[in-house]
Length: 352
Image (cartoon, rainbow, N blue to C red; front, side, top):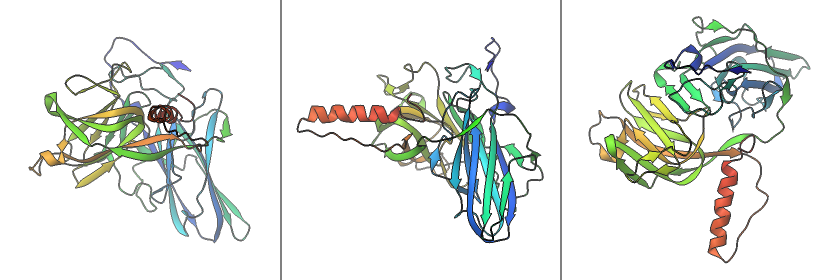
């Protein structure tokens, strides 16, 4: 474990803050009986096959003490693989594996196990009894992803102008991408715990103007969540969304309870309606303060950047709820609801 630098120099964004993505094309020319993916990405990964997300989990794999072990996840991809040309895509996030050492974003831990990395094996079992393995190696290609910053504490930034259309589809031209490097990693064990998933959402019934031309959306429920932003505007326009559990007297948000700035940033590509969710960051909040865009119902100028909708999607461990409580006394029912939300919002891959 390496101690991150904390000197007095101004922190700068650098290449290590931009998250990588990987791709690998392969062909299937026989009848497939079964196809299985085994993959680990540190700190987190999102895998796709032929442009479709693999699995319905979030922040995979689960958290571990990375100098001791890391977890890998198994997916049945039989229905997603197709005869002919296929393509695997993998995006990586930092998670607790690497906390970027930038002082203008909230951070708690000052340790790093290394930069993001991944290992993947796809096992294809054919109807004729033969098998084939597609294993991550230097034949895989890599490039920078549109996620320009991600910290498990400080938030996530996304530049839609850096998207490469079709990057995880067969036939994509990756000649300008670099070959992946071979690196070491920790001992691997299969993930046995239930995954983290995205569940129900809430939307704002109250939107309040606050100083500096910004807006606060009250999502009605304090929970561990990600945002979903639906927006329209010009290319290069930037929206910053600051989540918080508390508000000040003037209605604006405060993050004094966490001790530092944590926020989402989205840079528009200017191609009609754009919808974005962060891939590698969640946090607890009830309120969202928006800078750089106004609610759609306040703007008649179509050239202005407007928020068409803003949702909070609750994320938690997918373990099944096995108990319930109900009584004739409303105070007890409300107390149960508070406890239930508190437990759910602190159940991720471990209790937080």
